[in-house]
Amino acid sequence: MILHKIKLHLSLSLLIFISGCKEKDPVANPVPNTPQIESGTVSINLNAVINDEDLVLETKTFLNPLDESFTVKRFAFYLSNIKLLKDNGESYSIPNSYILYDKSKPNFNNVSFSNIPLGNYTGLEFTFGIDSVRNYSGAGDGALDPINGMYWTWNTGFINLKFEGEWMAPDTNLVFIYHLGGFREPYYSYRAAEPDNNIPFNIKSNENTTIYIDADLNKFFGDFQPLSFSQNQVIMDPSSLSAKLSTNCARMFKVNRIE
Amino acid sequence: MRKIFLYVIFYVGLISCNVDPAIKNESSLKDLKFEIPVGFPQPHYTFEGNEVTKERFELGRKLFYDPILSRTNTISCGSCHQQFSAFSQIDHPVSHGVDDLLGTRNSPVLFNLAWYKEFMWDGGVNHIEVQPFAPIENPVEMDETLLSVIQKLNASSDYKKMFKAAYSVDSASTKYMALAISQFMAMMISADSKYDKFIRNEENLTADENEGYQIFQQKCASCHKPPLFTDLSYRNNGLDDTFQDEGRKMITQNVSDLGKFKVPTLRNIAISYPYMHDGRLNTLDQVLEHYNSGIKQSSTLDPILQNGITLTADDKAKLISFLNTLTDNTFIKDKRFSEF
Image 1 (cartoon, each protein chain N blue to C red):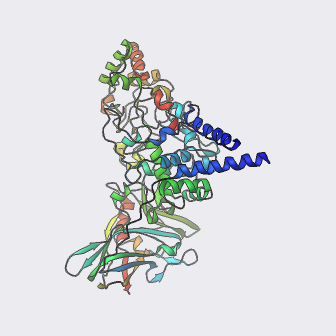
Image 2: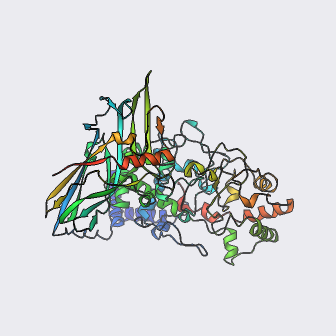
Image 3: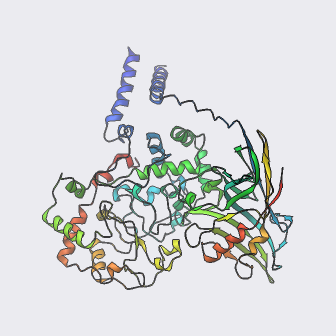
């Protein structure tokens, strides 16, 4: 009985002590996020295609421009610094616009940005990959969280594109792994990019406009720098080739539609 | 009456915890702040968005010493970075990771990191906040995925409480894990050695130490530049003429960086043997003899070292006397940084 009382007193005093310790300034009320009264929302919806077919992971076989057959295991890439072009020649850069497209994580592939100024726009520009400044800026989260597997930890930096799968070589199937990254001269792999075709759109008050963008994986194999599975099956370091392939990648975007 | 008696006992117990020097001196964490030592430049890391608090520092310390960061739950940051050797690992030429795997490089000392722009012997990591990710994912160090680490941390109610207290977040994430560990590491400052006291006019050097200091200034200080005792550059110091470990070139892909490694600090050098990026030299005498007679020629050899650094036996003895004055006992015994 006495023991119980002692325990009770001790735990009571412990409680008092702890609560005394934890007493702190109340957290200041967050300033309400006042939305711009006259603004709309833009969503960027990304979709991977090969020629005009939707990319399907693992089960579907595709042909590259050299008629090499392959299946895809992983396809992911970054877009950043989205800039909306106005019809009066001005532009609006969406702050902190980092998008990770990952075919295996569909919830990543539609990203909305609010507080977009109203008006008529002629199209958009963006960066393929993550720019140099962000690569020097320490720990990130959300799309920039290294947990997404798009980050080199031993040689700091984002992997701007991951494209992995199997090539049906003449005698056997061979794994290919292409990781494009690096932000230092001369082998940096982020690129200024724009869609092949820009379609005008209008941002209206309190309405959402979705820009559907196709990324054509077939462009990875050529246009600026041709690539064949028979010559290169693994690219995992910044190099002259990976830098040139990034230029291919900057050319793989096309606006499908705007709704 | 008994009630009062019990409360008194309990509170006295608590108070005595706070003043007992054998227990970690928690009161010192209350006034925790980053202070630039006299004569040091402005730091590179300014704790922006990661302002120093007791809760963040304590979370960082707990993570630093927790083997939960490794795949096998056996290796912590503190395994290869031990306070008594200025957070290096003595007698280990290269780091020992999970499953008894050996790394390729010597665990460097950890202190004054807030002044560093780049980390690791090859400078591959370009920001203190992303440094913890490298050993966690390295297959011969902790060999763990960040996803798994975060899952393990979020399975612990202690950790969830600590992340909440430190960063007002409901769960652990890579970002706040990295911020906490980097806050703990960036707070490590070594600037209270006998040399520092000499510079601050608080203590005198002996005749030998002073002569060693003169030799140091003439022959070593251009690369091992005070007050950090490194100029943070990458140099080939003539250890090899063929390069199994390409060093800085692995990061820059530039052939002119072949065989270059970061100039290490000489602070606490006497207590952080073995030496060089692969821990191949065991004593300071061997290191000095390397510069005197062992320089190997190669295309990227540092121009300063083309003809070596001539040092007599007497020079070496005096230099070592001076290097011993760079040992900072205040730092290696600072309870704020200790595991227990």
